[in-house]
Length: 101
Length: 256
Image (tube, rainbow over all chains, first blue to last red; front, side, top):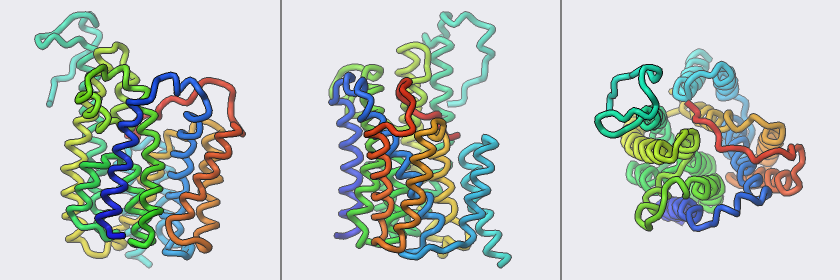
């Protein structure tokens, strides 16, 4: 599987899912379980990606500058800081810790 | 695009301006442009992270044009960054599962968009967190429609432009860890997750999924831990553990 194939298949899958929404009758949302599961799937995947991006290094768990940087991001989000400032502050924190250590 | 700010209180909401736009319409358009600018700003981090993960500039830009949904794009790039091309199937699955919510948004905004195959096709393309959030928080059908299209198209133009800029910057940077861009990816995911953590059920699922992903990382090939964590959501959602019997959760607010 080449990188191009991965990019194209994933892109078409996401676009198809968007289009599918317009083909499903509105009554689908009246059933609580599918909507609830879809919502929780988003939460679970984002949380899992945070864990892997913060702690993972290939197949190993590594504690490094990413963890304090994520803590900085969490504090700023709790203070209702704009998204882009949060992302830049996290990157700057990690960069600073690495430069000093 | 720069419109002079007006105090909404100094005119009747039903008064139409020169272009026939009401105060509600203008407010919806302003919100849409603001959301577009916010999303554009972090397109740079996506572009830089994508090339750091091994995608070339073209692949990075095709994702923003065709996939056009930030969470899925970051997810694919994140899985490729840790697992390489061998993790391709897991990368595709992660992106697709995160894209399911756009389908749910489509069901919700279809009545706002209205009829017509081409119009619906274009609308589906730009049906994302931002356009849905702006559309569903406007007071009238007309302002909802304006909010949807202005937000969707603003984000589309901004996101694709800054993706290209970010990819070119990423190419020039070299080792992105020196600049903390790996931490920026995690922070971006946290920013997307944050507005969804209002209910006990979401918080429980988020915490459990993070633990499952971390614990299984040393045991499974890269990419799979994220998918296994998704099983937590399916189980908790199916049985509605930690759930409240109340109304369904609304689309989240804009992370800006």
